[in-house]
Image 1 (cartoon, one colour):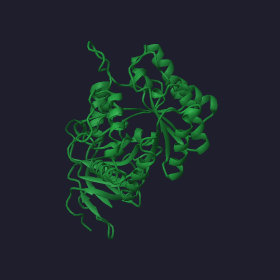
Image 2: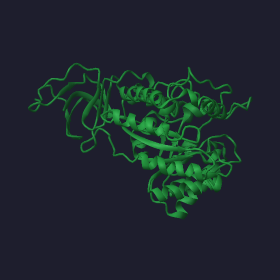
Image 3: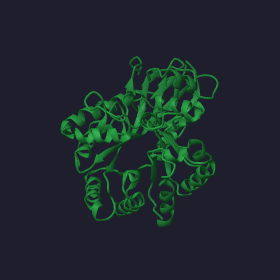
Image 4: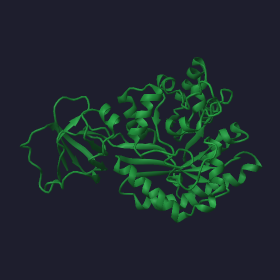
Amino acid sequence: MLIRNCSLEGKTGRFNVRISGDKITEITQFSASLEAKKSEEVFEADGALLTSALAEPHAHLDKAFLSERIANPTGDLMGAINAMEANRHLITVADTIERAERAVRLMASNGVTAIRTHADVTEWNSLDAVEALLEVRNRTKDLVDLQICALLGWPLSGNEGKANIQLGRRAIKMGANILGGCPHLDVDPIGANIALLELAGELDCNLDLHTDEHTDVNRLSLEDLAERVVATGFSNSVTASHCVSLGMQSHDTQQRVSEKVAHAKIGVVALPHTNLFLQGRDTHSAPPRGLTAIAALRRAGVRVAVGADNLQDPFNPIGRGDPLESAGLAILTAHQLPEDAFLSVSSVARDIMGLADAAPKVGSIADLMLTPSATIREAIASAPPRTLVIRHGHVTFSRLAQPKR
């Protein structure tokens, strides 16, 4: 495959980019006279910006597009959770497959080639969400790398947690890749951290936890998680999503905890869409931002990605399924530079997900997108339709004319 006459961020001029198999093999200055190899597809970029494809590090595809069906009467986190529990009878496996597949295809058209989705695994729905998302993973395997995280209900520790722990074992055996849970909602958050680390160790799988999804300065289980990862020698990947209450701490506490998170090699996923919508509703004067301490974490060397979380459901009534929207929110709410915000929804997100780098350079995996913009800043600002999306060297979506051969 040859992409001719494209722009590259930070470089002057236009370029030709050649892909062989699933790798970028050649980048040269644009020349209209460059001939294609025999049977090589040629795409004319007309100066559009070629970048890494995007990644969604935290989604809930099993809940996508439920806004019109299930209302959140209070607008906060527990309102959304209670609404989902009360309306489980309205959700079937077939219905979940349809909505989740629609969400994946929307994201793929927006340049996404990798998604990590959480799947509710609770006493109310058992393994239905995992079953549905496994089918979606099979249906969309040529479009995206779809990772499924089994999001266990609570409690998780002691005798009361045995049923949920067993559901976790069954979910991983069934085909989920990652183990998840919500220690901050457990009556014993520390016990939940312990139980999840032990179960992930037993199952030899990665861990992605909903951590401290609240603005209570007096509750901070992230520090305990980091300490336990180091103390136990847990060797698989650990991701802490949300981490909202870290943003409420003093500068010194943010620094101390961030350094522990870095030492534990925990990746953090900030989720501005839903946290800004759900958090801080009980504070009527100067409400807090529902956002983790992105700057402090990055200063300490923590990998911080940005995700969208929920898509048009009781937890977030809006969303376009476009990580450039998440990048824009990171710029506005966390004072990130456009270039850093873009990395948080592309290369950093991929790294936290355990995927290879896909930057437009020789030797990288050919997960790329073409956007009719001059710069990354402009792409985030205007979020124009992507004109070409490539995953592992194959076109998954195109608005360009049929390629020449």
